[in-house]
Length: 320
Image (tube, rainbow, N blue to C red):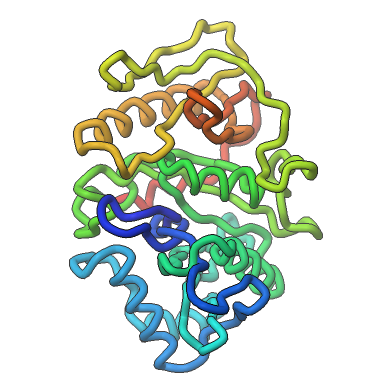
């Protein structure tokens, strides 16, 4: 349950991913990208530092935090708990994932990624994700899975455009609407499940279209046009607006800064985007990309009608 997001109020949030992640690091003195060390968490004090970041990220009342003992045991049994460390040894962020099997094949579930607000700007979250991928692959995992909030545009950009993961499922209210976290603010915790293919040598973009190599931000220059199925009224309220049945390509727009919206608008966006995703995934469409906001245009997911294929594994049993 991770998610690279920010808290709804106050200073910029830490970087997070998966059903439970939050922000991105990089502002401490000497925290240049080449000065940050990414490695496995090793000592009890470092495990406790991970828990402290959980509390900072999801709030003191968060009821789903993972204690230091579970982090330690998970790592001993094939999981990953890795941290990004400043030159002075301070923990800037961490990633946590568990080893398991799915359909008889070894996989890795990335459960948490969080980065302290002061460490933003150096792509620490992305480095942690790549380090986790390398360890999971070395342990024999063929794929890595995690969740992210479909309404947090920067997470979608990181997961789909930069990392090249592929959306395999939309799960309504996956972690429940009463987690105690300030990040979730009592809203249903709808999540997209991302899959990263670890069988490819490069790792990146193995499950979907590779990010445009000429575009360092992963957006590329080949935006496509098609009906937007989350229409926004003059008062700013979004709603589901189905495209004509013959449309083979549609776009699901999301707000550029979801957590800056009022509670009422956040709820309306959640409902509209949920309806759109469930409708088009059920009709056989696949998420093929994500485009960031440009000018007055909202960021949006690109979905294309796919050829019939075997159903992917379902994670609804993980729902609260």
